[in-house]
Amino acid sequence: MDSTVREDQRIVLVTGASRGIGAEAAAQFGASGAHVVVNFREKRKRARDVVDAIVASGGSASVLGADVSDPAAVETMVQEISRTFGRLDALVLNASGGLERDADPGYALRLNRDAQVKLATAMLPLMPEGGRIVFVTSHQAHFIHENGDVPTGYTPIARSKRAGEDALRALIPEFRSCGVGFAVVSGDMIDGTIIVRLLERRDPDSVEARRAAGPLPTVEDFARVIVRAGTEAAADGHTYFVGGDDYLAAAARTR
Image 1 (cartoon, rainbow, N blue to C red):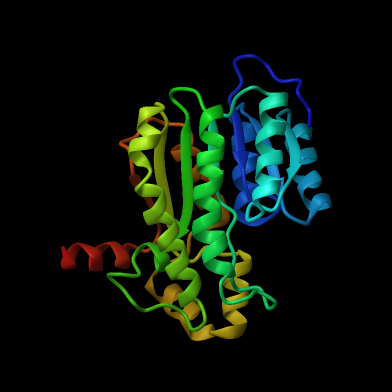
Image 2 (image 1 turned 135 degrees about the vertical axis):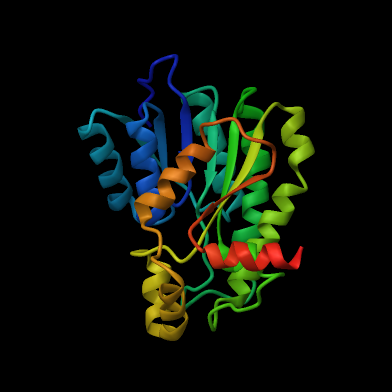
């Protein structure tokens, strides 16, 4: 990894950043002046392209491959960040999955809950006071207890993402004791993402229903809020919502 960073630069790790929301969040963090560590699982060339684009725009970034569901790979990633930078100022937990054709029944929970908790706790010793941990999720997952209207086939993923959010929220006292803040960014279906493209093939009615409720946020819109959550001071456990006003209204009626 490139270690040529300024002393005053924030070091930001974005998981699952080789494409989509993660790639755009990495680009926007880079544009804000941070050094971005672009994590990927398999798509090294895509991740390298993300880094090259950030650098070409005057930013600073590096590539770090690791399957976040593999404890050994996570430990190697922690060691690499520690050795190269000595600290991590923001951790964006963006990597998620479960819709893959070859995924086993327990994969969604291992990735969307267990891996998120293990990665956050593993990186915590590297994070200085004022650091930020951001968990990226969807309205279908965040509001699953209030609104069970989840696209066909997405329910296990939504439940596992909500389980991941709950498990991370349970760690807020530990984060707080280290001076590290925790926030959640929850979004409606995000136009142009792989999830929406998959659902358009598997359950097109669910996508049309969301479009009928209002314009879907763009990848750029969502990434902009992720950068805010990873940068500004906010109350521990604060949730940033992107799009889906009908979800918010329905949730308010149930309280």
